Length: 415
Ligand code: MN
Image (cartoon, rainbow, N blue to C red):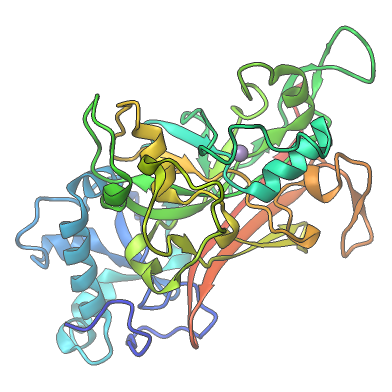
């Protein structure tokens, strides 16, 4: 059988070489058409309706997985089924396979133009954890708040630092983001004031979804962690820096992060990212044995940040110091269990160069300098009505495996 990531695969569905959704990608999402939500696969500017294919008997050996409003059942069944579904979909969409290509009746029903659908949250997220795994980001933030000498905390090179986040406020790309209010300390005043955040920021991140869960009391070994990870999305971990600065010690962020986190709608399978594995940063000191993952476990994913249509940052997922297998192994090492549909985010992904920093906090160095947008306007932090959009893709030879985008517009704080 031909690999589903072969660069020579072609689909009878047309798209150009900059499309994020060629036949080598096949991401899954939840879409609504004519008032009904179900699971689909994106190909070019079309969505393949998996619920319809399921009804027509294309997945005879599987339980019902796609006539539903979340990917959770599909996530729970695990890699053998993911691989089988991917192989079937890849075959059906090939230009040299007649079964779907020449069945006009089925094609017209099963392939729906994206302009005729609405996307929904792909997953009912149980738990959400946010890591802090970019050495560049941690060093920048540490330098700003503690000075160059103590930029990285002593634990940072030994474990992937994280906090337990809030899944209730994870929203789909396009959802407006309300400016939060909270306690902030202004200048050198001793007492805080209650105000709308004045230092609203984004964080350029990616997240992965847990497939089959684990049992309470049993860690997931680093070398089998990939069996528990289905795929990835773009994540914007919106952050209120003034609230964060006042509240974060000693337990980390709370109100500064819990008001909204945005994700992109299409979940790109790890299977589609296989050709884009690459070496991650050298890990020194050598991690403890439970964190030692063999092989090139980083991914070469180009990332871009746009503020009001101005490109303000270019980074790459390959800069992550701790990889996703190490993150999951560390998360569960205590016996903490995970469930299908849990989301783990990477933490802000900053490049070594300042043109690739993953937050305004870093790009404007705590607001000590301004970004100049294409319109000539300047920004230190986000203003009301600002729109922030991330995009990301792996560049193949003549094709892209992409994540689409995650976007959000800031709306004013409540009165
Ligand atoms: Mn974050």
